[in-house]
Amino acid sequence: MKTVILCGGFGTRIRDVAEDIPKPMIPVGGVPILWHIMKYYTMFNHRQFVLCLGYKGRTIKDFFLNYDAYVSDFTIKTGDNRGIAFHGVHPETDWEVTMAETGLKAYTGARVRRVARYVEGEDDFFLTYGDGVGDIDLDKLLAFHRSHKKILTVTGVRPPGRFGELEHSDDGRVTGFNEKPQVSAGRISAGFFVCSKRIFDYLDDREELVFEQEPMRKLVSDNQLMMYRHDGFWHPMDTYRDYSYLNGLVENREAPWMPWSKKS
Image 1: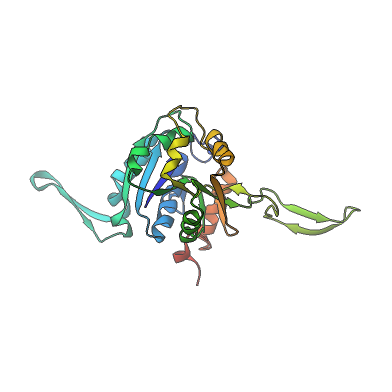
Image 2 (image 1 turned 30 degrees about the vertical axis):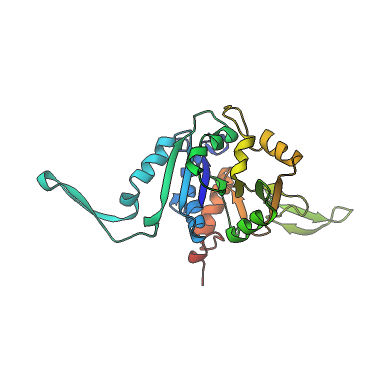
């Protein structure tokens, strides 16, 4: 089953971290956050990816064209016997990654529509953003999607708190402080969608088509959108604070989306 990843946005809110690379290529623990997302899907045996490229897409292409060189030791021979020998085997030898140019200024709906040919033959496919990580159980997400037989499933999470939350009495006395609160009511979309192939009936090639607006509203009115509740970890990388937080989790071996690296 294929996974479509939106990688084409301008990432204007995180330019203070990196201006010369697209947001999916911003490193977390020394490798792009895009790699983390793909590695997470691989844990559930999903190894076919379609990357919707746009802003600075060449950087993403270069990363995967030179992937073996980035992650492996190798020996170069020059002259008449020129060649490269890579040493060892890395775990990503069975990835299939399609680079799809979906336009510099296209919005999310148009980008998804423009990769339709790369998911032909699939009854369903995953769709997610290239800038957020979580510990969503993808097997349960897919099972939920197939159980209700609607067109689109979105993963709903409680948004991570951006500010410290003060608990206080009526007279102003502080009774508690939560450094990283979560909203206790209401959910937001974390991405991590599952789409039926019928989703393309709701999309067209207009560059200004935003997946999360007109198409999703029409799906709601047609009773074709369902939410999978996720109460575990999820975090986007929108700001420098997010960048520092996610890198800190990896550095301390506490990243929930990387169970293989957690402290024993």
